[in-house]
Length: 143
Image 1 (tube, rainbow, N blue to C red):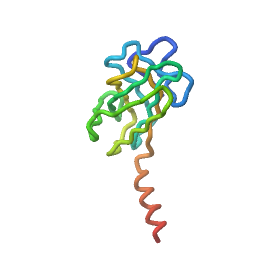
Image 2: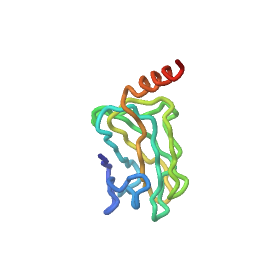
Image 3: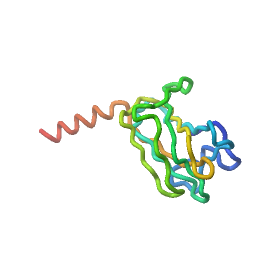
Image 4: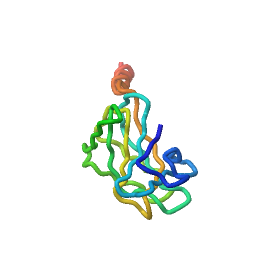
């Protein structure tokens, strides 16, 4: 489920799907955010961000906040706190977190943009025990 601080008409958070034919655009770029509820506690490993497909609007720098309950938010700062965003309207840019974090909610907060803030996105992650499963599989493959 997607939600946002604000949206232009016809550019709501539901339009922010990666590779979709529209995008989310806040009514005011400054201090805006888009939020993803991944449904349950998951290990968040990264974000994929993309500009607006039909206009020269994209986020060039952003930060991430996470929450386990949707009420209390923490800035993700393990990698310096700011990430480079899109370079154009069409190219998806993957930003992996150096240290995955357990969260149910992820916010992307645009800090700088081309034209006006606008984006499509996807959140990367897995169930909280995915590293354990992966390490067990690796061990099994080495037997």
